[in-house]
Image 1 (cartoon, rainbow, N blue to C red):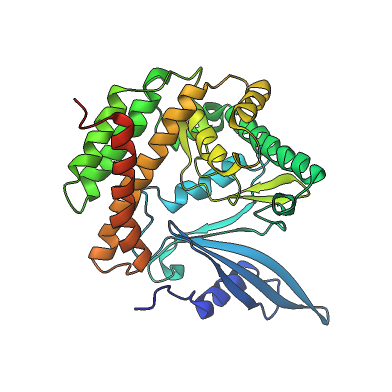
Image 2: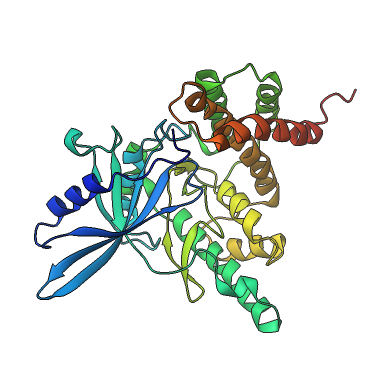
Length: 342
């Protein structure tokens, strides 16, 4: 089995032809995979067609689960619905073209989604530059990330329908505990070995929860440099919402600042977020969620081993990350919890 499965181009060509019947001789001109694509496959395709003696072109993004399924338990349809619900809000997202789950169009049994292509870059060029102007631009990039997170966290997620799509924490005080329990339950379903150390760390996080947030918010989770589309120092597309959840906004800040701390001091970035967000977040909560993010990654990556072990997805990355990352997290968080010290 190849390490990465190629996209079924003949079937995708036929699909685009029926999707756009007014585009004569529609064909796939280019097909490129976005790497590494651990949780889901993302393909960049250019559709070409004949148009009044000329050739029309449009780019799209095709997204689908790997052969063994998504690393998380989040259905692809839920991610598609996030795009639909967010489109037109203060949170910029690509327009959802279609979510396809009809049996005759499945790609090797997998449903898929197509969204519009947005031109831009995933790493603003100024981040690779030096000098006073570049340093000021880097701070501007971090502020823009904080601005967009503040806009996301200000949304009335309940009125928008996210309460029917995503699990709702029982109350703000239990946000952190609910996040941990969800991943302990993931281990119960998918663990390939007992992992007593990882489970004990989960219990330690439960016994030492973060301060309660002012309110429950809609979170992106995977966010920051490398996760968004940028143009001229502005985010024009927030992509890949497989981790979307409801809970404490501190999680988004912990993840984002893991990618921005080298460009602007974390305390300054948090102070800026608190100046533009509807409710403040504490550094204590951000610190707790930074540990939780490592714990979550260990649970998810280990759980993905089920797809490797049953032969559905033999990517060597699943094997190495699923075995090694939990060991690293256990070592780091065991030290933080001072396990083994009288």
